[in-house]
Image: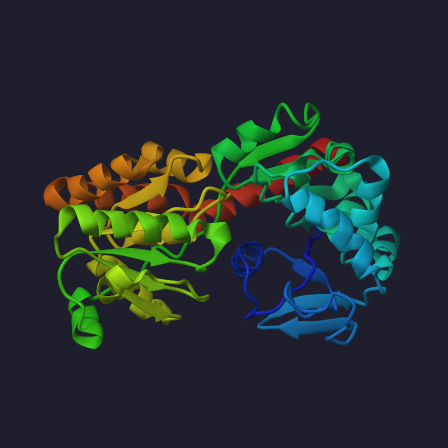
Length: 398
């Protein structure tokens, strides 16, 4: 098999983001498995930086053993982009002209697309992640018969854009992170001739944790709910804060809430003594904290996967997720590793059930752990990816 080109708007070992982390793990484990590959990306630093600035030099470099080929971006009309993007963020649909403004003034590199066309024969496939960026859209159109998407689709206004439906229906293959993501896209895109498979995100399942180390370091005892992730509105963090406030008023017990991850959140005065915001912690502390928790709560309504849920199960703890997120609810039900809520009474009932039934809670944790190891261990995921790549190549290139 010829080398695989993985295309992402920005790439680095320490830049944040779910798709960025997913790709880093995937290319490193594929490389370790002997797959020839290369990352194609722009010179932009990261998502939160200025997309007009070529922070990195163009050309071929190597990052931790991975070949990375960077291309300069052209100057974009930020004002024009923002004027249409705000409509999408508010759930409004765009007309054809506005869609073209959105994708044209997105992060883009004509140098990259030209290179892909000129060197197409050197690559077995081009794998694009995630779906809504210019690098994925124009890259797919440049080499559709060699295009495989890891789209990370969410149920949001962007997926209904006509230009995306037209372009991605031409892709040779699509890999989904969860079954609900696959099911959501079937009536939206015309994918009858596209190879499709649900694979998910690879996980290091050989982890260790020490609950006693957590108790000694942070001096937090008794039952607690842990939240792990960005503390922002998009992650529905305030629903968890508000529900925990109601819970404390009604239950009058010693339950606490531990928050780990970046961002800031306003804590109501009445529960400040029961909420511990630990900010960023290292990965070992994260495992120790999760293992010591009564449960992990993932209140987000919009996930295409959830690393923190899988980590909670690997640490032996049950999860509580929002029923509005089809992906996390699917994982909780499919694994029998957790519960889900849609309103405050359900939240209260679920928390109390887990608190009052420690044996059942421990079994949920074990169920979840088994589920992760069987479905998302890196060895399992890499085998699925290599088999899928070979299937796409056989179908479209012979």
